[in-house]
Amino acid sequence: MIVDVHSHLFRHSHDFTDPFSSDSARAHAGEVDLTVKWEEYAATAPESTRTIVVGGKARRSGLWVDDAAVAAYVGEHPDRLIGYLALDPTQPGWQEELRYGHQELGLRGIKLMPMYAGFDPAAEEYDELYTYAERHGLPLLVHTGTTFVSSAPLEWAMPRHLDAVAIRHPELRMVLAHLGHPFEGECIAVIRKHPHVYADLSALHYRPFQLWHSLRLVQDYGVFHKVLFGSDYPFTTVDDSVKGLREIARIPGIPGLPPLDADAVEEIIHRPSLDLLGLNG
Image 1: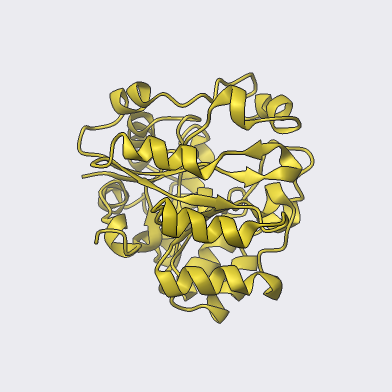
Image 2 (image 1 turned 120 degrees about the horizontal axis):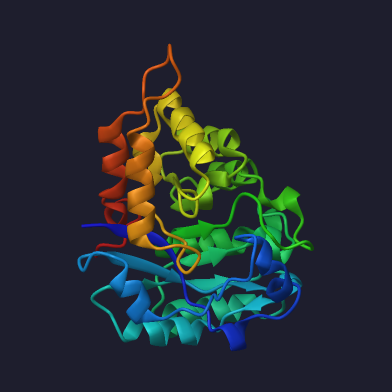
């Protein structure tokens, strides 16, 4: 079974304003239709795939997906999908949104976008959020790494900021998205030292040299077991992500250095991520 820990629900006409709408053309060097269609997702993933679905909230960047829409989408395919709520803690009322999304809508994790929303994720003023998530077993999916949105401060995407959060909240499950690209070394340094902090490698296969280099670092630091599979649909698909990973694993590598451990790469594809994140109950 494949677990996709990073897919989205976007309704193109409902959820975006500028600068997100206009800047998204930089994602693939051209305009991308980000409208999510279940039929398309299902046709590009093995039937046994289990999928975590997130929306996103970042008023500064022009992204706001209603948690109720995520819950409704997940409710249509409960055997395949697990929904997360999203929070922008710079906006008033986020505490009520947290409780409503968890206790009323039944969403099982939290998506945070510090760079897009413009906040320091390590700031102690957000410990109320992390304490709630830790107490209730809600894993976090945190955007780390670069973006196409010009108004999003890159500083708050640096994986190192989540180190302080993990030190203060050692039982909190966190996934650092996109292996922190292009700051993979920083991401690896964080996930290596904290038992419950992981990274996903979503949206990396279409940058093949970067993915190969990132996995070499993962191998050298001995943290293959901390890397989870994710697609980042609709930016790419499960099938394309699996294909890209396997192609990278077959590259002979640099003369004088051992190749990538192909078995370890295959284990990423089939990692029991729901067990690791406490979501199999």
